[in-house]
Length: 565
Image 1 (tube, rainbow, N blue to C red):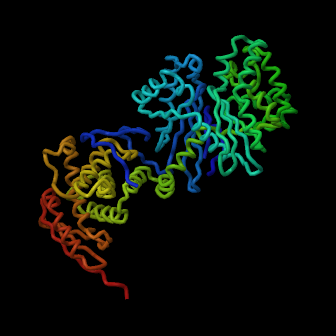
Image 2 (image 1 turned 180 degrees about the horizontal axis):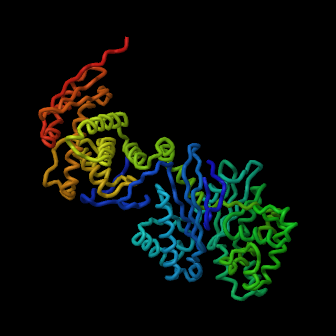
Image 3 (image 1 turned 120 degrees about the vertical axis):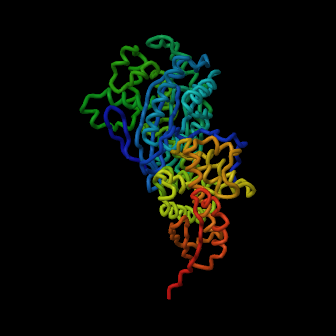
């Protein structure tokens, strides 16, 4: 997978570039929402590849990256957002998320969702780590995000966090010369990962995040010797066995990721004058440079640190604890240089989604119109007969276009007819008996993206009436529509029934439909490639609703196309 380079736009950082088990049937009109982007009533209109937003809800900060899948099955970054929220500022020791921090974080999440919606994202993924995972009110926070924002937050394990980081870094950094040790120091935990291009050899997480260590051990500014000694002792006890395991895997490269290491690397470069800095690589941290900045940091006050070039002011209060951990790793593992990668868990979330939703990803390259893509994806999830549904849609649209003076409908209704035709038989996925009703249920609750609730009701009802009885007053879903909407359903379903009959054999026998309207008669002339008695019988049988709705008499004839000589 490929991604693009980073540029700045305005004031913010941008990057260019088997059978389904279904829940019990809800009442008519009920709607299931979840991981898709909520768009109340606003259809998508811009063709584009699959767009995914990944939000990492960390202890210190919120990160979001929005990407679009490319034709090469990679992704390009459309937007990248970051904000310090310090959600876990007090939670890692007290195990309670402060109410003000929760409110602030929810506000940022709301803004992130608006950004994702403005970029027409197909999926919003939101994962939370140690701060939420370890707090007694973490569940309250997750529930607030769901009820207030409609956002589903997944609280992941430390092992899963390490795996996602590995996926992200593996895709961005070469590991061909041997195993690589990946070091990720967050606010609540530190992940130590050893991997090759093929697999992860070690995925470990320890409660050694910079914010956690600061809360536990550092009370003075600057920290006194006793605090630093206790901190070092705690790190040694926590990592002693793990260090031996890492050594036994003989890592040939050392990679650092996330805010603590990025800031320490920036401090290492920033301590030099301009001439020396010209010869330093911003994306790496040499031990010789780190040693100097480390000695300065452990003696500095907060006021001193705020003046250090390269340090994010929001991390000045906890950078010392992070530096003590990095110094321990440098010394214990004899690390000469740490290569800094800007990839982190959020990119791992994207890669993992693409790997586990490969049919959807591949479809996004084939079909760039989001609504159509979503319809086809639902059909394929339900193992539909794609050729039959495409044929019925083709015939239905042809009839629609030739009956404009009968139905007087708009272009948007033509699109609804097409999508209803493309999904009319998906109810077979649940069972043949009453499959037209199952089709309605699946359309309503199948996570179709970019449709308003009313559009889904109309499409679902049109599909529901492609066979068997016509609409009745006892049909709750149909009667929940307005009179005008019921009229649309009647007309579209009447057309769909006839078109479905014209492909009764499911082998695309009817190649063309010509329709003439005169004297309250609708004469359908079919051009077929083989004998068509079955299609004529089925179309006549299903023309009852067409005759009733449009007050015409239907006549059908057929001509078999002569084979080419």
